[in-house]
Length: 301
Image 1 (cartoon, rainbow, N blue to C red):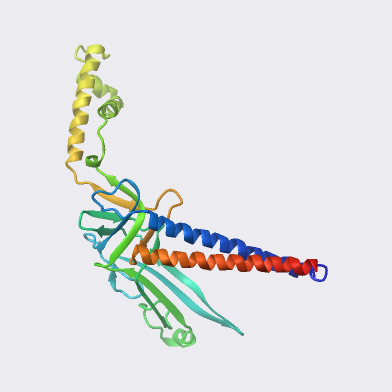
Image 2: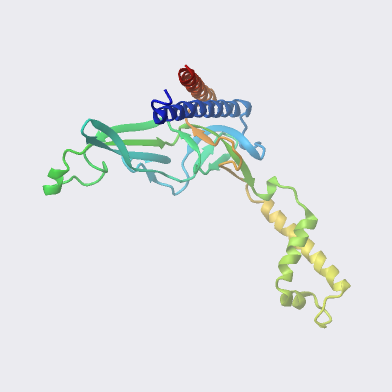
């Protein structure tokens, strides 16, 4: 077979090996994501540890934020859209994506113990609301075509898809959780004092003006002791001001290769879908391996 058509043999071999390796990767990815979801316990926002956590709550609106879906004009908290154009050339027919996008507005998740602001950039998002329809305008909210141009393009077909998050929907979120605010942090008096002193030393003339009591242009040991004491008091005062501020919780994409998922579906439903993906990948891997073995068997025969 190889001698008769070596190009065809290697092309088919590349395809079967690609199916085997691609299926294996898809299987491992789905299995890993499912295990990440199931092995990470659900936390409450108020008591969540810093790092990779899983939250579950309700979406609420942010002050002064008014978003609308770009294709439907419906009010929402987040959107993603896709516009496809129908192409026909002889017997070849297909839909081709000509425009797509997603909002990057932050989301506000509330669970009864607190609220967390979520940066959706880089997340794998599963929205419950998904509208799909067709039309003859490139943009469904655009002006209708008229005149000669409208006549020439009247046969064009477009397919639109818009996904959205809305106020009051449940949201499952797993990602990197961080709390900003000194109330959640320990106070290192020595480090804070050193930071204040470094800040003051950047304006050495001002430092001398405040603490050079004998006016000789230098700070002696006694004057440096006064600097250290004043810096300690300043650091403690700054810490007290920060402690009085409310803690702010944020979630974003993890730095490591961990899933960052936002979904209206719960953990169990998501895990099932990932297991099904893993099973599909395993079947594709097996089919590719069997096809590769068959190719070599035919070649040897």
